[in-house]
Length: 209
Image (tube, rainbow, N blue to C red; front, side):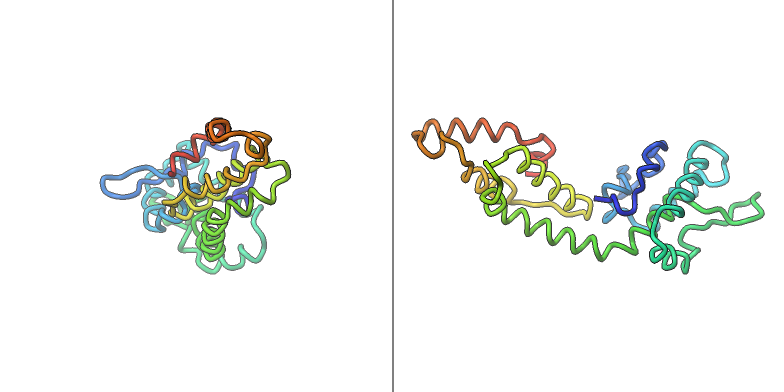
């Protein structure tokens, strides 16, 4: 989901630095998973709690900034670098401005957010068309079907959106399972098969229903 702006190298850092307080009372949300909900102001307020302290979060922020700077495309960098106030901070005791990794990441995300909105619209369309997706799957591969559904839901969640008709669309897809029980079996067998397959839905899917 965030693969284009979240280089693999960042995964080695302690990413609790990307948990941002949102709302009142505050609830911590991941900038990566909920980038459509976390605001620029909230990220800056978070940065001010550790920049210049020389603690682990301060160090991780610096490493994250340099990792991102070396990983994103020149086109994105050229755009983000035109607004240095978005990710640089003047901290008492430091002679030069400090760059903040999470703030830099937020600036990158905002630059690409138009694409994100397009992605969430497409994900919603894909969920509505689960029946068509299942029909096109060879041998009704239920594992691939569930992975596909989960990916669409995660895309919606990343943009701060959800779906209210997941169960309806899921069972439209399951109704097309190409199994002998479905083709030749009686109604009780079909119900048993449907339940058997539905229990393989990842818990992460049902939590959005």
